[in-house]
Image 1 (cartoon, one colour):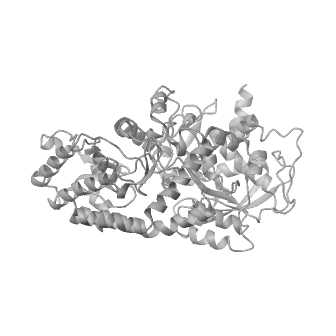
Image 2: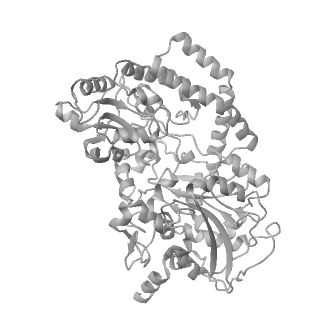
Image 3: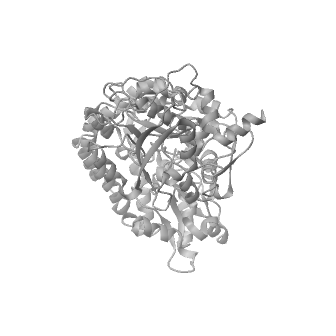
Length: 580
């Protein structure tokens, strides 16, 4: 027993865990070798690792400019080569140059065999597929990717999201979920409102629980707080900006708002939040606060750096952000604001249309001469322990600070440096093809990333109980014609709706102006847009055939989920770059 444990650690979890799934167990299977037929003629064939002859393929990826650029130095890559006899020719592009360079690379005949970390949407995926740049992968997934196949069986919403309307799968996802109950996932909402509790204590005020009480608190901040430098700012945000918009608080007036403005009723009807009377009421409430000087006048124009500096100055009473650490040295003075009851007692937290996966991450191109070997190689990163290492980093690396240690039973344990420093993780991880499910924690790794765990607790205990909608809008992979038409309508309509949203906060809106706004939305194609989005929702729901379309959980299932084991809670990042 101890000998096998030692072997597992020396060879890495990739070899031992994949033997259990059969990928490395090649006895009696025909070995793949380099070369083979062209992609257009190739058929999926079984692969046994390690290969008898070395096979090499090229992969284009991105990396932060301050992290390791030579991926061949990474222990995870070296272990994979030892275990498979497959060498990857890494083409590493700095983050800021990647989008332009991968598009250029895919337009040339000498394109890389694999491109990863693209994060592209269905329209672009289908465009490359129709040009013959991306090859269909479903046969290779079935034959060469048992780890991914198992994950897709467990998470049918992911399979539905990566399957095009023509039935083909052209890209591999990454999955990073925090809970089976999607109402507890850390990205079920975006911006969290953080209030300065030290100011509440200084003024002997209670945490506000209603919109009226919050207004009174903001007035008290404006009249009585004297910051160390500069003027007090009772409330600040960046309107219409991801993870910095106050749409979550508008839920006190009904539906609230999210970043793409599509919401779904519990009767599975898709609607547009910025065309609702409830959203108007919430925006007019913000206008009232703005008129009283309680909202930062720069909410319409400040850029990210200006906003960040302002939050770190200690002058803001209430702000909206992904994490309270944006307050810098003043972080400990802030706590999450409780969901507020509106004028009629409504307490609701609107959910974002964020998911625990990204569909357009990795593609195998028509330049690849042996997709079976390549897909079998990539599948190793969908093994649970390897997925965690791909996402975050590894252990026993002599060249870099380690993200994890590994015990004799193969469980990963966070190091202090790995848990606290994204630079340490960036030097070791790949962050491309992986799947971390919520039940991996406490089994393959000791705990969540600390920052994810803090947000998970906040969402689960403060906001999740007040999410009334059972559905968000799913990642529906629609027909290209529908995707094109949605884009044609949405481009101008969303801009107009968000401009009006900002204008209401600044200037208010009369009944006549509101009616004219609604009419213009219809003239711009809102009803057709909603019909197309409804079609996508219905299609997705039918494909998954379960009550968690898009990863959402019904109210009845939410109650049931409370009884699941503590191991069923996981971490993952919404913003891909934030985890690297």
